[in-house]
Image: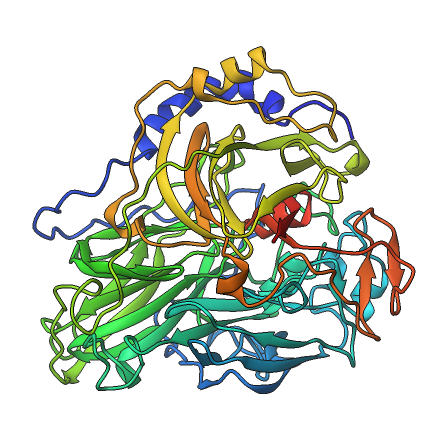
Length: 608
């Protein structure tokens, strides 16, 4: 791998255009919106010879499936099954947790340990031809006997229950995890995290929601916050996909990249919700609570309704906001969740309103002509429902959790950089790329250290022409501000060294505009934060204390018999690893899954 930043490939032609894009894309905090105005439809996406495309599929003909909600306990097998994504597509092989695709909504309660045994019964890989043998620890065996593990995304769990990407199980094996649930009610999710094939394993179906309840947000009809429950609390797992004519998934985007290469991004041309293409959902005239996850590999969304109506954001990744935030739109990046209330009381029988996506492609995907995606799903009016009022507050009052503390700037500040590089090891690919954090490989020995119980500020500097959702395991995050920078000047003054040497100079001298605070629906606790191109994203990072966690977060990760592991120094290993280098700690990474697989992931140790 050479040390030429990937930015060098695009910077000359696109630097000025990037500044113009950033000026239009960086939104001010959301003001109170004007009265609803119907949004005109966008033109149909252009069909180009550079991209794969699904066969023509009629939208809104299949009913939205609702995953079962079950207790987070016992055993859950990751299995292979047959699934039909759309009425007009043949059945195809897919993966899921205990079902043909995706998994049940697991329900747990605060301070009650949930013990779950996951088991690998996947068989051969659903996307075997697309397994990239140049990725970390990936071999031909991953096509016929694929590895898997499970990460509870947003959960503050001990290292041996976090689903570390260096430790995984093949068919017949699986981990037994204990989730402490020592955190407030939130919408978490669980998904595969096996290094080098995560993007393929999740695309094949290995993901599901995890409802964490507490004494305020109980999920029952008499919950203290007055929130909709039962059939009126609905999970929505949104994932873009591309399909072949035989109904199978087509994970490739660009026709000019050879099969079997990680293409640095996956953006589909149709949208699946809960595993079905462009579904329809009958709603009664009442308020619904939607637990929405962007489970896509790479695509961010700006969710709006086709008639411009308001909805109410009530929470994000790690819990509730202080009160409902009325908004006509909300941006959600891969890995992020939004908890929202939608009032359908004005929707007559048979009348429809569509959930749509109005996000434009970022600069990099615009250049490569990736198709945009507008329709998501349709809601159809169908009778009256029980009365629900939109609550005035959700925190800080009687019978409510404590109000959010004001965000502040901690004294300890780290600069972290996001870079794109040319990858000479992938010379067979057109535009061979890789992404990195701090100019380091995933298995670099230059590992960041943090201290449990401390609070830091991370200034994440995105020098690439792509937006990146950054996820930290274990930590709780708040957005402080975002600030645009002149990336070309930043590079010219601090040109990166050869790949493998840490590069993280401050970008403050290259700021070209004022800081912009988060929009009101993004002010709560989070675990995944979008970092736009040509921007410093400043975040508060809170590492829980040992007392809060109930365990030492730096204990060595045990490798159970039957598991396979990769050495943190890069040596492949298997068995009980008694004489292998120890694995400690957690990871932080981009949640564009293709980026995380290569090489936009770093280890971090959290010491007591």
